[in-house]
Length: 145
Image 1: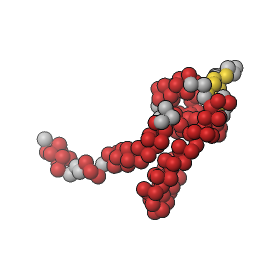
Image 2 (image 1 turned 180 degrees about the horizontal axis):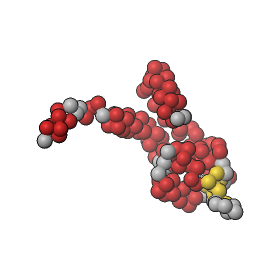
Image 3 (image 1 turned 45 degrees about the vertical axis):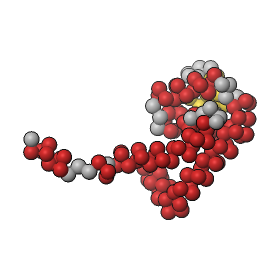
Image 4 (image 1 turned 180 degrees about the vertical axis):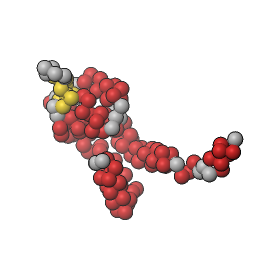
């Protein structure tokens, strides 16, 4: 009983790293969610389009690794992007490879990229120069481990 009481006495939920990161994510994700909503995309689907465009063809498992996404999230979002004709799965001897369709490339360049730029500008304005520098430093330190 003493240990439980001691932990409760020393616990400040407002200082929890996961809670604070979650709140920050929700604040900044709103910029991207709003920008992509009119295109019928989620921010994750937009990220997948950019990734496949920039690094494709690539395996589905590579998407999850590069963006730290759950397999089920990648599968669900890919189904939607394939159904809409933006991404295609090509058969290869080992496993299917994902690539952009011409329709997907056009959609990305004409619609998604401008929406991303709008969201990115708003997010960076909110962060400010010091916040952006801190985010860049943390990203390099943590995600390149």
